[in-house]
Length: 316
Ligand code: NAP
Image 1 (cartoon, rainbow, N blue to C red):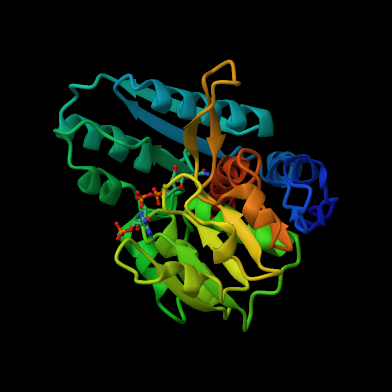
Image 2: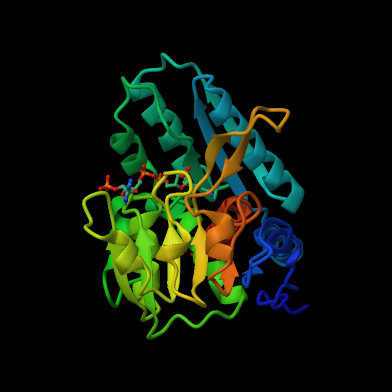
């Protein structure tokens, strides 16, 4: 049976925008809906892979130490694997593990044919050289896309990375599923980290946008941002991007996840993005909410990368 068509247009939901800002002009980019759609598509593809090739995609997740946030991320990743029918392999290692022993764990997963993706949950304890560990993940299993060669291939014209980092890949997927034109458009990425900002800028450039990257030393960022048709915000600063940074009709993708004190919330805080949602929604044509925008896409893209790794393994 034919693999399902992965491109769908989500129904727009303006409920959140309308609740938050009466002056809103933006439609909401529903990342939760798109991520659920992608997970269903992946599940169907996995059934086909199992039936036709007797192959089950496998993801290995390595956790070092007992950071509560890392434990939650790892648990969610494993659960997501099980839901789509992947094999999930895990190693929960003590915080005092030596670098050498951790390298051995990575090498064992590299060599295991049942494993198509290897992910080491960051951050690692201080005595371990993070770069050394990430570099040790086999290029063919680097589902996080953090290997310098994968990032290098992303930057080079005429070459393709085996994997693209999940969060920026999710941003582009949202733009594409909402049929936002990218070629020839002015795009601004706020942030230049290796895991979000830089790959997001490269992905937009590969799709023929004219890209400007704003960082902490950029002068007059609001003026530069206000020229952009597409804004990807990933600076890790709560609600920094205000309404006057947004060109009327721009498309805004907010990667930021920040806790903001909110005494009306039972938890005492609420999650906000790097964009001031209400102000930006009054100017933008499309905007992602926080939560429910980019966040759910990250795990969906991790699953997609693992599936791609498994499909490549058939061809070898
Ligand atoms: P990061 O490594 O801290 O990088 C932040 C970047 O923003 C840096 O390049 C920094 O510039 C720039 N920046 C900081 N303050 C700025 C300012 N005032 N003006 C302009 N640029 C500024 O952060 P990250 O890991 O890329 O994450 C960014 C945000 O995305 C965070 O809120 C994080 O929680 C969120 N995130 C979400 C997901 C998800 O799944 N949704 C995944 C990853 C990250 P310099 O380079 O000059 O220092």
